[in-house]
Length: 184
Ligand SMILES: Cc1cc2nc3c(=O)[nH]c(=O)nc-3n(C[C@H](O)[C@H](O)[C@H](O)COP(=O)(O)O)c2cc1C
Image (tube, rainbow, N blue to C red; front, side):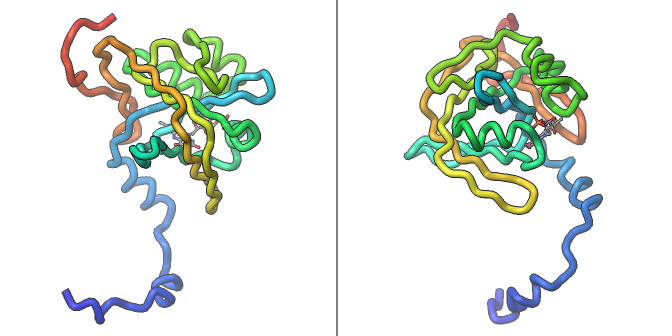
């Protein structure tokens, strides 16, 4: 490939950007694991459903979560600097809906499921597939979202081979657990 044929970056910046409808249509094909990202607002648990969560680095152990600036959860994470990422199993579909934009209060969101805490005090879902309890190491704000980089202080693995909750083509679904076995 001839690198000199690339247009200058300034020219690309002025090129039209992707319409939101095209972005959404294309992103429906990005299959995602589903998490509930939680924190505490004073004493009050808050949290949201998120698919924009991924591993960041192994050494040091970090993950990242992209959180919309408009939500109540963003403000609480930015203030408390702690967050727990609770990876969901397929039996958590109702929880994912409640935390994912259903018109319910945070109190109602946490009314479903069994919640506890580990090291940071951020709420953890006791039967999550895995829980990452984090201190927010860095926060980068860009456009409508913040990238929260979590320093993983503690991990809790569910010993049961649960099928993960997956979001694909705008719907909740699942895949077979990697180690087939009895479901609880
Ligand atoms: C499947 C799914 C994935 C989502 N992923 C994210 C995400 O990665 N980041 C985000 O900020 N919001 C995401 N949302 C939207 C929030 O869960 C939703 O807007 C929530 O009500 C925000 O709560 P809050 O006002 O407490 O912040 C997602 C929603 C769904 C249903």
